[in-house]
Image (tube, rainbow, N blue to C red; front, side, top):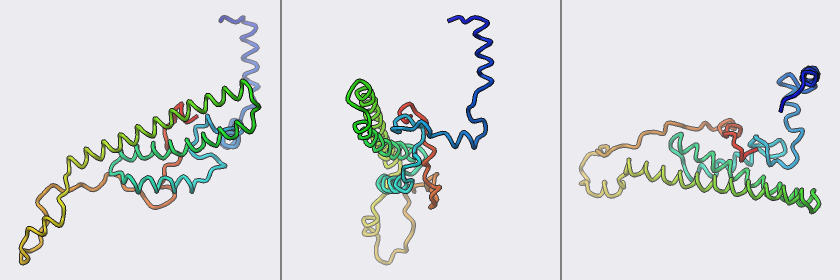
Length: 194
């Protein structure tokens, strides 16, 4: 679409009068102004959500899967973030039923909820499958011998020596024990998390 010179000049003058925030502090202050349902935000944890609940979820899933390298840690983050956002989608769906009267707008928003739920569920299932595959491959590369059978084969008078088989290397990534250990704000920005 081609616009006239007069309109282009008017657009430039209006652009100079923009009243949006200019400083980082101003931008930070208004970043959640338009948040109604939380369906399109890029933030993993919203101001009205409890970061401790996110950390607890992270700890539970980490204890279950025990990631050993950065790739597995990425799969873990995808699982935790997907579950967290699925909970938000369910809460948003409830607010849509309560706040929007029956009609075209409610149906449009519910369609969006269904789409997001399917994407997050698929993301979670894919991360679980990838984590299983990664751990399976790691175990195949570094088979561990059972300690009881190795000791039972030795005579009682033999000195203890380390097993001759390959040793599992220490993990490349070790999480610290503070609240900052959980990458609550590090998840990738995807169309699913808006």
